[in-house]
Amino acid sequence: MNAKDVLGRAGEQAAVSYLEGCGFRILDRNWRSADGEIDIVAVERHTLVVCEVKTRTGTRFGTPLDAVGRAKQARLRRLAAQWLAAHGIRFDQIRIDVLGLLRDGADGFTIDHVRGVG
Amino acid sequence: MPLARAFSVALVGVRGHLIEVEADIANGLPATILVGLPDTALREARDRIRAAIVNSGESWPNSKITVGLSPAALPKRGSGFDLAIAVAILAADDSLPLTAPVGKMFLAELGLDGRLRPVPGVLPAVVAAEPDSDTVVVAAQNAAEAALVPGVRVVAASTLAEVIMWLRGGPPPTPPAPQAPPDAPAPALAMAKKLDLSEVLGQVEARMAVEICAAGGHHLSLLGPPGAGKTMLAERLPTILPRLEGTAAIEVTSIHSVAEALKPGEGLVTVPPFCAPHHTSSKAAIVGGGSGLIRPGAASLAHRGILFLDEAPEFSRDVLDALRQPLESGEVAIARATAQARFPARFTLVLAANPCPCARTAMPGGSGCRCSPAARRRYLGRLSGPLMDRVDVKVVLQPVSRRDMLYDREFAESSAVVAERVAAARERSAARLAGTPWRLNAEVPGAQLRRAFHPQAGSMKPLERVMELGQVSARGADKIIRVAWSLADLAGRDRPGVDEVGLAIGLWLGVAQ
Image (tube, rainbow over all chains, first blue to last red; front, side):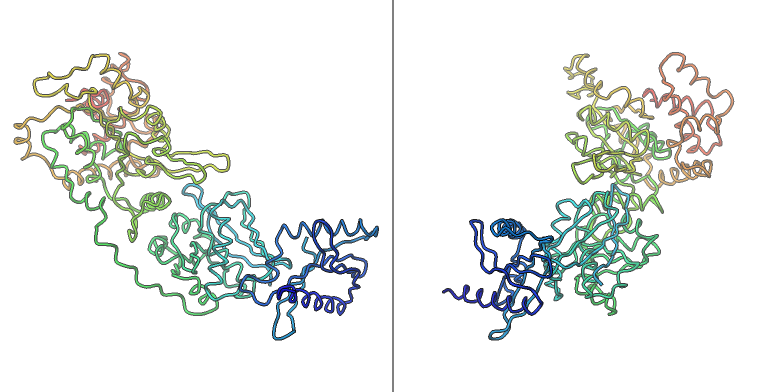
């Protein structure tokens, strides 16, 4: 595995632990369709939350949040609809969150959690 | 506090409108949104301001920033809002005290390195901001211009970092002493000092006509062969005009500031401007216009000064006829889909023309011209009737012989002497017009002229005669009366008499010799 993929895996694992700590119930991870991949699908109270996790080691190329542009937001919305269709579940509310993880020290991450981006 | 305000000014024509810049920092993915009708240069401000803030050692808020410019319906152009937007964002991000920008107006473009750059139109902007702001912050290069407005504290800075320090309670920035302007002296000023009316030898009537026009603000046309001194006369007209003062000087400087025609380091424009556009100039170049940003044209740049059209028949007819509106109303109104701009354009028009295309008509001996009468008519016919009807004084210049020049050398008066007479005449007319919005005879509307000011009894006889003959239009009659008043002012008389009216008729018809 490439170093960047190792980092991404570690970041997603840290994000899952963080979300569980916040009271999210994780439904699915790394769900793929022809259009792309959803990193984490979770439920917070009665809301379906589609999470995009972006992990970086430094901000030389911008913060992790900077990397989630309009195109990516649009894709996440599409993927959320596809996930719901594939699983035949209905939710009153659907939300897209972005978790920006920045590595500090050996294994720790600073997590920036932005709720409801679009 | 995620919301902060700062103030700037948007210019429409030479009128400034106070603009409130609000910055809101909300939760969300990092993005900067600019709302409130920005043009391209202003939309690019997002990237400029971000680089400037980061390179000034401040942090850029890592969330969703919305910058609103209100009133939102007014189109906003250019880069002058950069500093206000940067200050609003920093205050919204708690990098600056929230109350720091209150009562201050910010007007400068930002460089990517955080430098403050000068912008055009600072003077009218500060005039517009003066009732609401006690302090204006501008780039160091604009400081002298901003300081022309009394009652406003000008803070000049050269970098964004200096402004930030000051807003945090530090000492006000002290920009480096303004660099001495480059050695080359301001050309127009130097020229105006050197030129002198006494250099125009042999044209006694034309020199007198120039004096009358200077005294009353009348429009002038000079018809004559090449070398007779038409251009020389026109160029020397500003040397006998009084200097601009008070609001007139502010108006003129404002127009030149918007047009970016001010020389760096030049303060208030006090020498009446002299504007001589080339005959290939377009309509937009003369009356103003342009897509997007509406810029003043030559007619406005000549406000309170001289608009000289050399080789007038060579101008396109469109251009000449477009001048009819400013000649009547003293301002140019330019309407665009998004905004309407008004530029003052109260100038003295000076037209110069050759008698025919080959211009050899009046050579000594009178021979040499091969133009047919039809060609001559066509040539001068390009100066349309309605335009010539607005020219108060028409002079036909004769070629000057060597004897005329030698003889006249002793009698030609210097500009200083003539300027004194002009100033005295203007004082007389200003005293008579005290309490009215007009100051020059040429500005008085016809109805007012006939109602409030009466020439000597019986002096209107010659005018009645030429009107009955159909040689003079009703507008022409008003113009003749105005010139007659200027003649009376120059002569130190209380009212024009038969002599003045007669001479004014001659000048209007172009037959006074």
